[in-house]
Image (tube, rainbow, N blue to C red):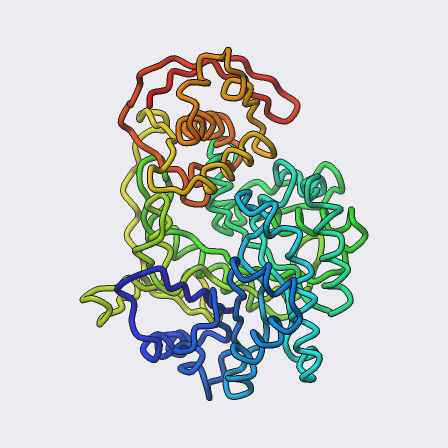
Length: 461
């Protein structure tokens, strides 16, 4: 098992101290979101296997120029290899969920993967260092239940995912996915028991009506949804990797279940599940090993979005980075079971759902491209019928500004899709507020999958 070492914080320990913590936890892998020279140098002469990443903004350059790709590999891989045990190069992060770069970057993703692979092949490293890219579950069309229905979105399935799977198959590389049972449970609390999300298999199992497979946890359902989607494109045999998973220790308004107790249970049981020999795999792929990275090593205090975004770490940071405090006891080698740990205090009771009125509004500091990307997602795969902001005759058209339209659409998406796994994030372009900023009444028409909802939304901006 590995860990994600994010760097979106202004109080994080220096890389040598961070690597010391990684080794202290007996982690076998680490994934970083760039190719930070200080981190790669600090990881030299350790047994930790390293995954580096081509930043999103460099993908077009890598895709359009083999010489640029060659230079990237020279500067960020071979400059440290083999003393730093780089084993994977990821091309970008959740590219196909960022609609603000749909035109500029999506078509470049697979060509960039191929160019980095060619660069490695020139150096004879293509069999030792794999190339892939991580995806959010938003690459799927609709819901993860039942997993046998898993299907990639229509806008990416043929033009991007199919050639990507062909590349991954030919290079024996994994399809990486970021899967968070926390989010699926959070927005489906009425139908998904929290024990099911926390690997407590004592409850009622879920039987897939499509193939009869039986599930005792939510993560397996998420992973098998991806497997089903790959099978529909003729590539069921491509290996899966879990690029991110975890549970937050703190949440804000309308973020339930985010606490130390649940985070400890999830990550402890995840480690136990992944360390079992022979491998457990999933119901669709029994006994298959799944490389996985827990999110995350540290709390990152500069991450945008809701409170949970800044509270996923195994460590909290104090004293401006000089002190890293482990939040709870955990054995990431997977040798310990629940009963082997010291008892933890139960979390305090949470307020009843629906007691707070919340609005999902646009972030004033978000760029126009971020806002438009969020609008494009909500009005497309997100299922919102956006005629009320595109038709000048509708009451929500004015003021005719991107930020005004974004707030209306974001709130509409959150209002209905939150029960289907939707959230108020939009890549940092939105946030939840309990303050009612109402000035006008807007008529919105929503279309969610096979259902049409006609309703009035009172929205203020």
